[in-house]
Every structure is written in C-alpha cells, then in structure tokens.
Image 1 (cartoon, rainbow, N blue to C red):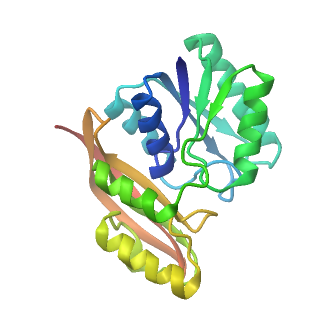
Image 2 (cartoon, rainbow, N blue to C red; image 1 turned 30 degrees about the horizontal axis):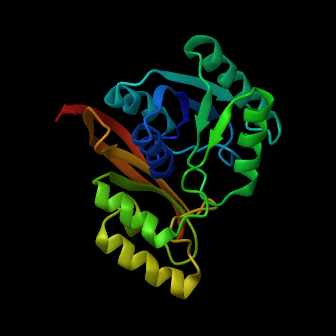
Length: 228
C-alpha cells in the first residue's frame, strides 16, 4: 500500500515510519506541517525545519506546508497537505506516531475517513517502558529537544534516549508522574540516525534556551549530513 507518514522528525513519527516500512508498505512521502504558533495543538514546533534534512537523509520525498496554528483550522491545513499527497503520490493510507493524544488520533482518523484513506497508529497506547526500550534496541539516535514538566531541567536537553535515559525517566515518572514517553507536550525529540536512515545527521551547533527551570528548548542551529 502507498503510505504517507505524518512526520515531525521526532521519535514517535520516526517509529511509525519504521513500522510502516517493516509491514511492507511503500512510504511514498512524508507530510510535515510547520505551525505559526508555538503552542500548536497538532504539530511539533522545535527544530521543525530540520525535517527537510531528515527527509534527505531518509531519501523520502517531503510535503512541507505551513499551518495557521488555530485549533480547528490546523485540521484544514493538514487535510490540504494530505490532498497534495493523494494527487502527487496516489497515497492510500496514513501512518501517525500518536501515542496517547486522543485529540490528535481522532482528527487524523476523521480526515482519513473523509478522504477514503486507511489510518495507522501502530504504537497507540503501547506500553511506554517497552516502547522506549524498542527505540533503543532498534538503534535510533533520538535526542531531547524540548522539555516542559516538573522534574525535568536543562541537563535533559540534548540527551540521547538510551538505557540511562530510560532509568532516569522512570525515576521521574515515579516521583513527578512525568510521562515515560514524554507525551502531552512534556518533551520533544529529534531523530538523527537509525536503521531506516541512508545518511545520519550530525549536530554542528546548538544552544539551550530556557523559559524557566523546567521548560526549555535545545535549539539546533546547524547540522550536516554524514555518509554511513
């Protein structure tokens, strides 16, 4: 089946893309929306422009559209981008990295129904400890690019998701109820490399920008593509 992956560049949309490829689907394009608002209901904000570099590293065509960031208007923006994918790439389905957001999943499923497409969210309500373990086991290089939760602080920015990360986030979950998968806007990520990447991204320069003690972003200023 020809599939479009709704892609933010983070761990969840990358894992959904990985799943689709392993299921034998042909992922013919990535769809990314750049919101004009910092508090988008549907779409990632930090480092979203780097999706263009990730698409090059993945060797998958990218549909990159802007979104108003207005709550329900975002859905019209997403539908517009999906219609481009239908026309240009003849897609028959969508795959999304939704983990726990009912809002996101319901709206993706509604658009898919309206456009007669199949919708897949392979890690919906997946066990989070197992899920993070799978990211590590598969060899993805995912870094923390945003934090917004009690218990998280600046030292988490730029961290790689590895065994030490999983151990530490479990402790914060027990103490502060931080979501192990960093759902609900508690954290954002970017994937630099992994088994489906033809090239890897290397960070040349980046900077931490903190809003308060537990809210901030790892702003990546420059990356380069490196042969594997």
